[in-house]
Amino acid sequence: MSDALGVSIGKAAALYDLAPSAVRWWESQGVLPEPPRVNGRRVYSETELRRIGLAYLCCVTAAMPLEKASVVISGSRNHEWQSVVRSHAGVVEEKIRELQDAHAYLRHLLECPDDDIVDECPWLDGELMRRTPRRRVATTSLTTAAQALPDRRPSPHEGRDETRVETTASLERCAVCEDRLVQPTVGRRRRYCSRACQQRHHRRKAHLRSAQPTSRRTRPS
Image 1: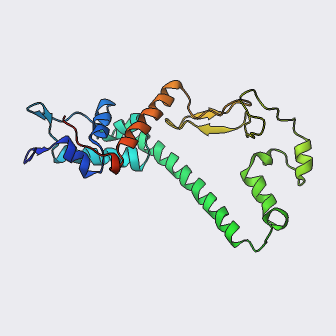
Image 2 (image 1 turned 90 degrees about the horizontal axis):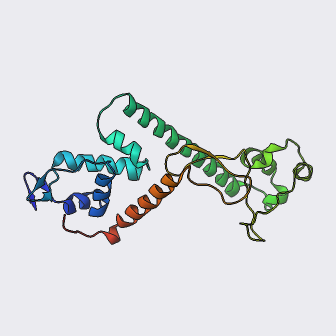
Image 3 (image 1 turned 30 degrees about the vertical axis):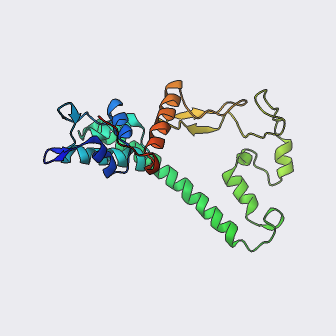
């Protein structure tokens, strides 16, 4: 189906190299409104196609959580809309800074004139103080710093040879909603602030896998 009124869900999805199931998923989660139907089939007009494109930019390009993307795609530029966009822009800016910081250090590793980074690099101590939990103890000697800390005893969930870096001061963000979360002192690291966010993450991974070009398929509406 393709006429002046619009196109089918298969063609609408193909425009952005998505699977039709990805578009249906966004609609079921309230990110996109369901389009009008003709003879029981979805019909995507120019406006709906633009809206799918905005959903792609928010959910795929900007990695915005679905509940935030639904606010942006609603098109109502009210206080909530402004707050959501500003908040996620801050999250992206923080990730950019982290990546720029990582890139700068990798460039340093490439350009460091010392053959033995561990024993000879004059910058290593400063990098350890800046970028690792070692900064918790302000002393120039790593041995003295390590002696000042209590032993890190393995938890029952850790293998004999595993090493994990976890402290009560380790603050991270939920992989879904970006809310702050505190890592436990022992046991498995948390990636989600709640079971609901964990389930949303798994559903998102499933629909992104279905959106890969090699898995794209057209199914009846």
